[in-house]
Amino acid sequence: MNTLQRDQWKMATRVLQRFGNGLSQAKNTAQSTGQTVVLSRGLSASNHRSREDSWFKSLFVRKVDPRKDAHSHLLTKNEESNLYKIQFHNVKPECLDAYNQLCEETLPSIHNDKYYPCELVGTWNTWYGEQDQAVHMWRYRGGYPALTEVMSKLRQNKEFMKYREERGKMLLSRRNQLLLEFSFWNEPIPRKGPNIYELRSYQLRPGTMIEWGNYWARAIGYRQHNSEAVGGFFSQIGNLYMVHHLWAYKDLEAREATRNAAWQHEGWDEVVYYTVPLIQHMDSRIMIPMKASPLQ
Picture 1 (cartoon, rainbow, N blue to C red):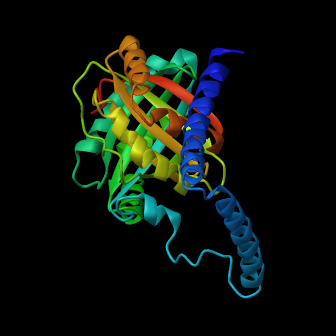
Picture 2: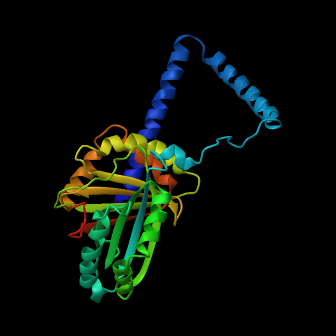
């Protein structure tokens, strides 16, 4: 049994012990008042009636949730306020330095120009994870209309179009996603460095995003003590049911200490235990900020 399996076994044991203790207390209470048999019979009769009622109601009651709002409306602060775009660029190894210089010359000019309703949240090179990769995150205040405006204006920007042409010669592949931010996470703001950043990406099982949000709305409180939480996002376009958590640490040792400390908080083990089954795939990148990144 490896370390991960031992940790999962310990978490499952703790949860089952708490559940078992609750049942034992209920049983002892019933025995002390002479109600054990009555309670058992009452539960049996109640379950039988519940099954009959459930079957009868199923003939007439809709089983579809009549919710009128999309799940994204329940999870985000305001869908029309902030839209995020994350870009993953896989760079030819021999072109990485030239690529970084090109980005540092071009991206800040767009970020600082009020003509474009967008902001560069951060720009990084992957240190551990996918090698020779750059990650960029943009924020569009005003949602999809702001994104459309920026894209339209950039097509008229000769310097930007030249940048795209030069960039294309240096890339092996690229992909992006449009994201919304979770309402219970911090909004990313510029940070002074030096820091390393971890981008943890989770591919969830379809239909589990609300459940994930409910657990993490509580869990994020356990991960704020060292100001390590930068931002939390979920996809709208691109790979769907994808969640990204962005964390900041002084170094890898601080990362390990901070993550280990979370296990000392009552309730963190339960959050992990119940959210792991929601995940189909997960990935972690340790990233180093480029010189032009507002997140240093």
